[in-house]
Image (cartoon, rainbow over all chains, first blue to last red; front, side):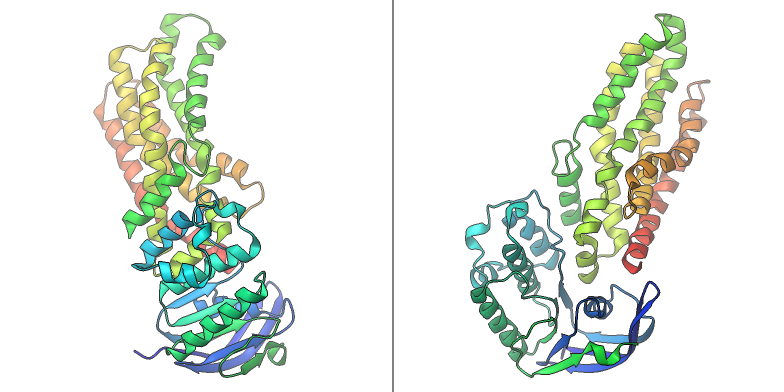
Length: 193
Length: 217
């Protein structure tokens, strides 16, 4: 099955504020999309709508293929060693070979460290490892470079490139630049109400 | 799937589990049973007549203590969002949490009922009725607790509010469960069990609705 993600005429309201409206796009397998815009313009809300976690005020989202989301919340047990916290998600995702992701993201040495002692960048890498092990075609990434050092940023950009080459879709919401295979950018400000 | 969820939930909630708390509700329960004779005096007959009811009230209040750590932390950490993306419904997650919550507090509470009954000088028949009543009633208490914990998880000071909200909802269980002590009637125990099962069937759905509404909010 070819991965696909399409949004039609999306509008989003948070509280009393209409964040954006009339937003449509389509992503086919292998495509990447950069959602740009200032803080508070609705990038995270858009990703949550695409993930099906938030109902849009108007419009609809269509997706074929599993969705993985990386946002600012780690969703792991703070008191568990990282290895065991990740193991729970590997069980849920039915992942049999989690080791490769840990190697790529340089996490192998952190497996015994309780999650609450991890730094911002290490937490981000843990979330990305879970995304890799989920093995799903559609990646929704909310500020994925935040907290990562230059080396990890490079490694991660290479991962996204590889993901898209393999027929995956990546939607990256980021206020900073991101090396994407096909530089398609949505400036959310253009859709602001 | 449910096995994986349940293992994690038990790891969080069992005494000594990662969410903390542990045996505190149990000690609280025993403390009430210990204080009561001091408060009403050493009238053995009075203690034996009212002791069963005191155990019930203590059990109800002890069931409130773990509510704070039942849902809030996972909701804030985004665990339910990530599960939702993986096709694990909030209902399933809450059903697993309900089972884990009951397992974490009820069996130990039943055990602690024995020393509590001894402290209050209950006779054998009364102790048995209390035990059977608690066995029938605690699943309902757990269910009410879970639904209320999910409802109040996103509120500031939600824990205190949860305690207040559980009490009126638990009244039916208390009426029939403790009512069975007044006259030897298995019907009251069965009604307690029936209410409990009804609440257990509803609670995962109510809690799931609460979690989804927080997400939309």
